[in-house]
Every structure is written in C-alpha cells, then in structure tokens.
Length: 138
Image 1 (cartoon, rainbow, N blue to C red):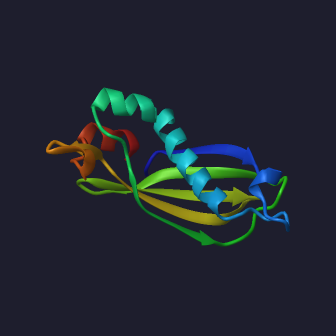
Image 2: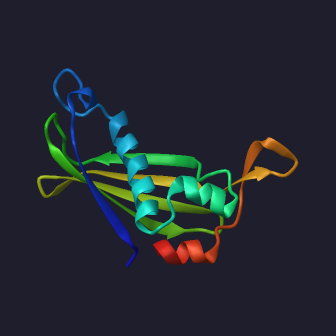
C-alpha cells in the first residue's frame, strides 16, 4: 500500500466560474499542491529535493482528470495524493479530490526524475529514480 497524504482546502470565489462551480484548471493546481505536500510529508520537500539530490526537478510530462462530481464555491474539499506507480525514470502521482465523502475528481500526473542534459544545460533529460526515493513513497 503506497504512502498517502491528504490536505484540506476550501473552494474560494476566485476558484469558481460565474455559476460558482470550480473552474477546471484549479483542479490541476490542487493536484500539483498535492504532489508537493506528499513530498513534504515524507521529508523530501520539493526545493530541498532539488538541492539535496542535485536534480533539475520533477517535471510534469502528462496530466489527466476525470470529473465524477462537482465542487462549488465554499465547499470544503480533501485532496488525497499518492504514488500509484514507479518506472525507471518516471512515476505517476494519483490524486482524489473528495467532496462530502465522495470522490468528485480523479487525477493523475506523470513526472520524470529531471536532470540537466550534460551537453546542454538548457535542456532536460530523464534520469533513473533512486531506489531510496521509491521506498519512501512506495
């Protein structure tokens, strides 16, 4: 069973469209925050991870969302995040947004272990994910 982390937030007016429903890009913002909070919860905050492990970052290479319900202005939601799979150079972060005890949105981000290209530091490349990082989150 993978390590899971949750955080709570409230849907604010600025997160909503004129009908007071959540404007869809905000779900992707909450997914990204979920990834950062997941890393913090296992003691590997994103900014420290970059410096400590000498990487460029964990760039997003794919993102998806499936909408099962809705979230509206003033709703209190829970964002649950966990690593659902690891590859050699990429991993998938799954997210569930819970509203009133039901999953309103299921999301997925695919990220790579980003390294600077040794031949051109303006480019990124995928590197092998260290086993100790996988064990923290697996």
